Length: 193
Image (cartoon, rainbow, N blue to C red; front, side, top):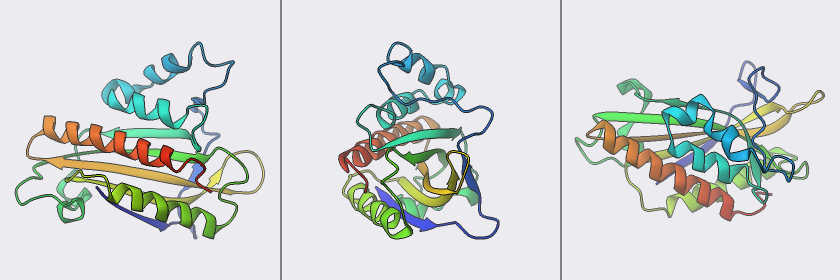
């Protein structure tokens, strides 16, 4: 799988706002255990991209190094919205492309305390993703400022996961595999410190 990361924190760069009006807290806790899965399954994004439910469940699990605040799914990417060469797509294997994004927040306030720490986590995650044998897919990790609670801005990551294929069903299957590989690679980092 192809993967890369970058900072996008200056000037008018987007800020991840956890306090947005539609926020649904998907983090597993003993108190939320009874409706944890139903919260995930009731998201409009998981209705359109069912495989996203398993990824969100894993990323918000009790021992996950992160939690999520927002996601979206794009059922069709235009030709100018993805680069088949950057997805390791064979010639002619990119008629259809799909994608999604997930905002990732640190589980602990001891994580990602400075730019070097979050950059190191992104480099490590990209290394793990590169070892996942899946062509026609890509993960882009964008480090952003985040408003997690009232007060100073923290750092977080928007992960863009894209996939392409000669047909829409194949692109969806590749995206499903990319999401599973992404969650496994992220979870394997255990602490993301």
